Length: 193
Image 1 (cartoon, one colour):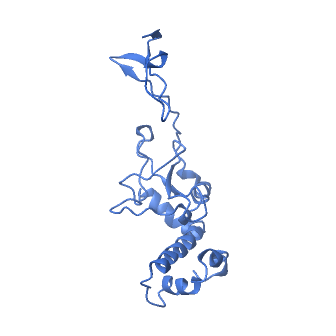
Image 2: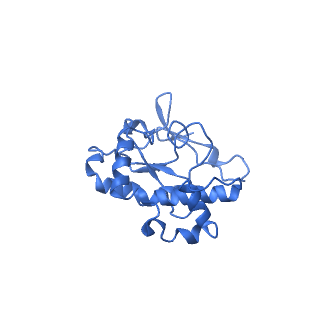
Image 3: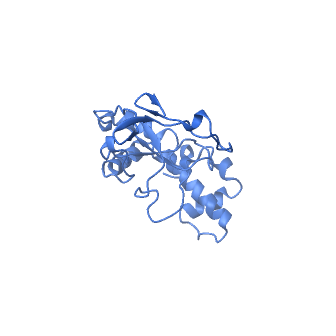
């Protein structure tokens, strides 16, 4: 139940003086406000309650189905072979960072792809606090069978020109003037050019 004191503990202080009004709007006990500030506070209230819900048994069961169906998207790395990803909030505080995607196969965190549920048809960024930093890893602890059985060990990419390995020059420093000198040379199969 949304009104449970556990679900709301500490949120009143985050939302502020409009907490009661926002809660009534979220619970559909009153009409939505035309005030953008209150609308945003309602979104934050709902999102913070959601972050608590997804770590409950019922929430985890629902998220399991969503992951299995690929609702959160898939890892874009070729070596992960379409591994479903999980939403991850790097911070539990509001307005710090948008939601990211965690791939349990390559153990990488990345921005959502345009095909994921968090980018579909809108430019709205979902706050990472709406999922929190705990969900993805607690979820995988709860459902160990969803860990990929063969994690990826990625070998570093080796740039090549006409089949020869090359070592590119160091990247220029930001704001640095371009110029000659040794930094303009590069290595081809161990020979300085």
